[in-house]
Image (cartoon, rainbow, N blue to C red; front, side, top):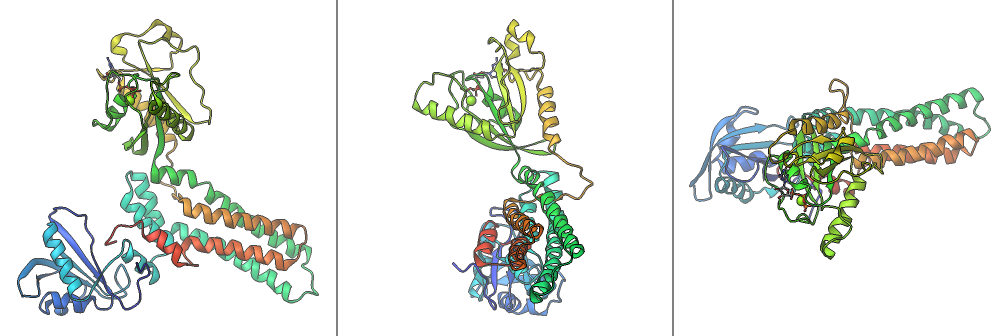
Length: 452
Ligand SMILES: Nc1nc2c(ncn2[C@@H]2O[C@H](COP(=O)(O)OP(=O)(O)OP(=O)(O)O)[C@@H](O)[C@H]2O)c(=O)[nH]1
Ligand SMILES: [Mg+2]
């Protein structure tokens, strides 16, 4: 598979989701895009002005009509990819759209790889790598906040920030290398101090970017919320109620849920990754249930938030479980429709509710929403939220810069300092794609959908 779009090739793909829809979009990009569109339309596409949507009939090789489309031509470099791009908005049936695509391929286009249009935009300098990633974040955003953060990254906020930090290092490096070239001259204490404080400032910048990793993970993947408790307390019933549909099997048999089950939910504008688990008990019925319980406790350990569910008819524990990993916890008492065992009087903070009658459910939702929103942030402020790739680059840059600072403080050989500074710059450059490798691009763009 050729992950690099070789210059001179023209690619085509259906950019809209598969299935039936009012409209479907065929996109063609590359130097031959207009010639291919002209072949598909008996020459008409070539006569249409750029950026003017016009009615165009597309015919097959025998001259039979495939579809009546709305055609738009975007002339290079004023297009998403930076190349000549043609778009046919056709009737969005799967047969019509696949016939349009087949026709484009027969006229000389190559089927695009996932993300190849955006990759081409990156290679043509239309977007840096953080902006290209933000396109994908935008498409997969499930909450307003995730969407806002993706928009900001798409506008280049993160790329600009890392580039300005990189430039600071570059200027310091230039200074240091000037001294390397004149080994007889020592750096004066004043200059040394100035260089150090500059690098320390960059290091703080790196630390504050790294601090946004948790927020980035929550925005992209959601708050890991584990529903935990003894068998039969109503954990799966709660999951279904929160989702608004019957996702998990509910039954009066203790040990119904055996494997963990994950589903995303938007609660109060915050994305939650709800995880239903097997009920915890000391004597599992068999090896499968024992494995389910083991998985439940792994999930509990990795959670951001644990929702502990108890059965109102059971005897209350002397103490509510403490969170071992400093996660947030919520305590719920389900099945209050069956009456509440008097031992629960000592635990007034436990929210009483019933999945069956819905009594108290609004308090349950409010409690979850409140905790979820503490993970949220001020919508007016600049939202930078790095992803795992950015985090890795920033950590490498931070480590190299730490070394460089320590060496400068100890008056170590400047040549060694410069090696560390170069390493920091290289790691930072990877974030916006200043230093690109085929591997890196392959990993990033293969996550995209075809046609984007
Ligand atoms: N009366 C009453 N029954 C409930 C309520 N919530 C759940 N149940 C019932 O309790 C039983 C267990 O519910 P589940 O949701 O399967 O419980 P679970 O905690 O997921 O159980 P395991 O997966 O076996 O650990 C089912 O028969 C439910 O219908 C409630 O609020 N009131
Ligand atoms: Mg269950």
